[in-house]
Image (cartoon, rainbow, N blue to C red):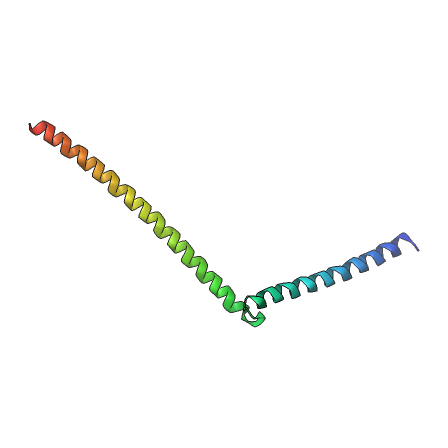
Length: 93
């Protein structure tokens, strides 16, 4: 056998193993999804559900951010107001 023939045989064997491996991976993923109650045909719906969940999560994170900023603003305003009232009280005496 020549070196080219050996390389050709090795390439064919590796290609066949790759196909077998890909098929096994796809079957495994399908089995796992089926065990979670997700049919293979429902991929578009599952994808839409995940997109919706991502949007929901991002909106909740944004609301938390705005809430934190509002709380800090209220505390800072109260503190500045207390200082201002204290200064007015001291100057008014």
